[in-house]
Image 1: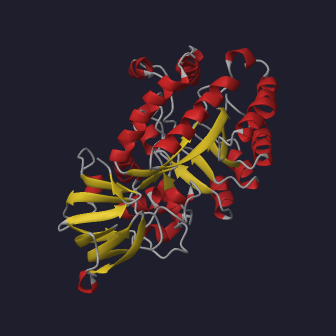
Image 2 (image 1 turned 90 degrees about the vertical axis):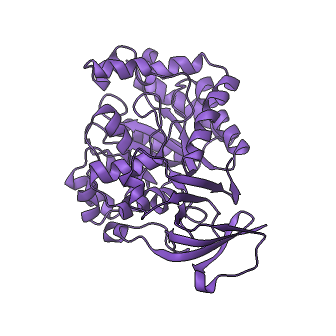
Image 3 (image 1 turned 45 degrees about the horizontal axis):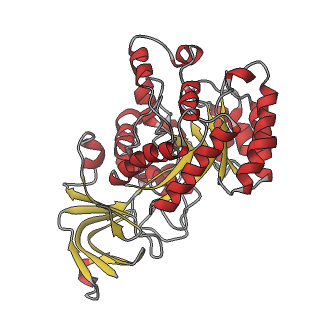
Length: 411
């Protein structure tokens, strides 16, 4: 089945296959073709160019006059699989309670863990698939999903099995991350090592046996997992082939980034607080920094200093952090807009961060993240727009006409 898009106002993020990410000044460059065609065969991009060279061999022709086509978003940091919600904590924050105060009252991650362990695997799947379907319709064509609301052997396995079932049931590319080190359960509050031993000696072998995860994560933060504790977890995960992707520098900078880079973490995520030393360490690494601007928006904490990081030559990816407590939205269009509005990223930088750099942050650069011959036909076709600047400018509007994943339009 060949589908030919014609008269595309602008085809964005057109790249050769050897470009895996963009950094520093390169992030301001968004290669495109105006008055373009795009040819898709089955689930693959096979050709593109200007209309003057447009082929005529196709099974279906779609006139994209006035519309922009770009690759679907690659959301490299989510917690889509969870039970219930934490809307009461939303009101608590309005009434002046901090993230830490809510956690100390039994809220936060432990609240979600309690709900998850009371929810059946089938019900958890049914709740989670609705959120996945929603973000797909909003243009997300690849998504990383973390565990971390179980905090027990059975709870973490239940979450990861649901993630695996979602990956088998939907065309969207899904990567699974084991985040048993999300918080310390109450019974381990005074004995951290016992919980870490549970992760290493019981959870990890079972996860590996069922092939349930691609990555390993930890919440490296003051009051959660220390640098030394996170290092233990990263080393244990690597023994099972799980590459680290670590929550770090959300509230404090405690030299966690240096340790993540030392252990070849694929990403370091959050980075609302970034020091000059952190930037220097990241500059000489293959680790992708990931910003989560809608988390900063929702809980009113600082935004990742994108301008400082990009000016220093770093790459940056954007992700949603979709979770019940601090970012109950997976809308990557809003993430891109918020990065422009609050982090002063240009539209070109933000789109690069949410596509090609997002793919790198998920380890799927060879198949996703750009309009490249041989890559998956994962496309957003907008409504008629003046320019792609409207995507962040009209932050509250739905500007998507159609979403294609693996060569098929979502209905």
